[in-house]
Length: 175
Image 1 (cartoon, one colour):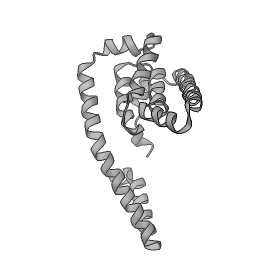
Image 2: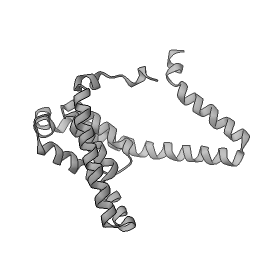
Image 3: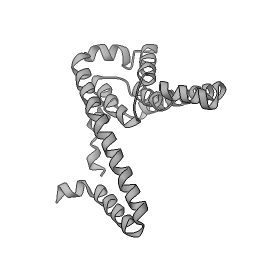
Image 4: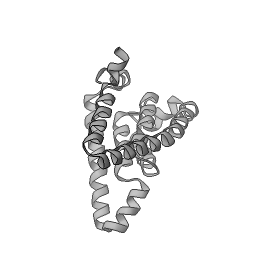
């Protein structure tokens, strides 16, 4: 029963999807199809990412990562976070295993928050799309304000959260 309780949110959503299908069949089938496509996308994206994260875990020494992304790394941490986020590909949920690995290896919370923010607003495909669709002025304003915001948020998070506290946090207790 305890295992079923962990998945109660999933069952509630599944039940809601079934109810929706009974109420409005066409909308329900579209929702089921969209859900299935999203699950398939995730199943094709996550295994290579998790393999990559496992390889990075073995290849990158903890001391090296602390030197370049630790709390005393200075501009190197910012630039490395910026580079990792800009060259990223894929949706944001792909970035979380990488961020968890960086946290485990000793990267500063500031740079992890900044990395996730850069992944969100300044990936190369997003930049190219914004340049072509909205113009240079909008894109530069959007990216500059976004980078500034996420860097400041990283500093604030670093003040409130301890690295060990985040590593010990168990998400399943909240569900």
